[in-house]
Each structure stands twice: as structure tokens, then as C-alpha cells.
Length: 222
Image 1 (cartoon, rainbow, N blue to C red):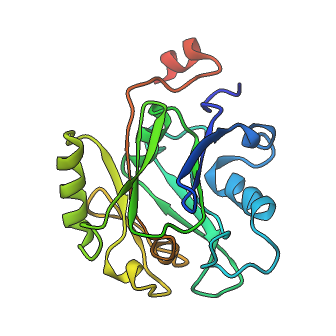
Image 2: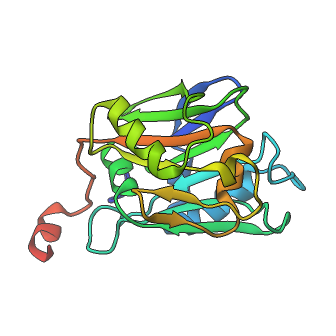
């Protein structure tokens, strides 16, 4: 396993509700570094040629890099997709705060979402386990309210939440994804894809360690 990577992607099919794990990205991480690079390659592999950005089989990916959660300023997550704002181009948006770090400590390098739920749902991830849950009562709520309610529901104020508001739900082509109240993934209409997939939010909580290639040298430097 490469240092800085957990070796696992979470693959979520909202059509069936099935959640699986994959290590397919590990053969790519040395050539496509970071969430943005890896996401670009995975989009090439996973998105059917000419797919409509809002189609069920159009992937929406949340990806970390090898330094996420390890160095100052390295807590970023790349949201990669085909852009509904243009209909043809690669979309990527970067969001900071702690969601990406929390995902790594929960055991995953990224989340790849495909399919379309029949009703509003959210994804709950905690320490190597993930589950698609109903979110009908959250649909229509603003992002600030959604984060508060999900943290209360999970019983953990340190759970990290990515979510959309009414703009994403109503498929506004440039809708953003909000995180930790005031952080945004705001390029390319990534929130629109969450709305099309009826994915209201992703909540994550982790307590594990992030693998290092040379932990003794890292300890000296940081």
C-alpha cells in the first residue's frame, strides 16, 4: 500500500442501495496524484462516452490525496464529475475544512457515487462501515439546518457533513455542495449532481490512523 492512502474507495450505487469497496485506484495513484488527478482518470474510466452529466450512470466522486489529513493546509477534498453547468466539460471543485480528513480516518480514500435513488437519501460512513439511509425529512431544508439535524441524528457533533440545499435539489445548473457550515465546493455544478441522484448529504466519522510510508521521518518533520 502506498503511504498516505488507505487503499480503499467506497463505491455507492444509489439505484440498488448497494455499498462496496474497491482498490482499483491503487494502480493509478503514482501516475495521477491527488484527488483532482485521480478523479480525472477515474471519470475517463467510469463515465460512459457522451453521458449526460445528470444521468444515473454519470459518476460523482469525492476524492482525497496522499497528504489529506497529514500536513498543514492538506485537508482538501476534490469533487470530480462531468459538469452540468456546461454539459460537456470535466467538473472539479475543491473544498477544505475537515471532511476529507475524516473520510481518511474512517478508512477510505474516496467515495464514488453512481445511480439515482428513488427517494431522498443520505450516506452515513463511520470507521469502515457505510449505509444509505432515508432523508425525506431533510429534503427541502437549507444546508445549515441539514448539518445541524444530521449531527443531532448521529449523536456526534464531530461528524463531518457534506450536503446540498434547495438549489441542488431543484437542479440549478451551478449549485454548490456545502460543508461544515461555511465551506463550499462551488465549481461546475457538483451540487446539481447530488440533487439529480437525490443524495442530500454524506456524513462521515472516523477514528483510525492514516497510513504513512515513513512514519519516523514524518514525526521528525511534523
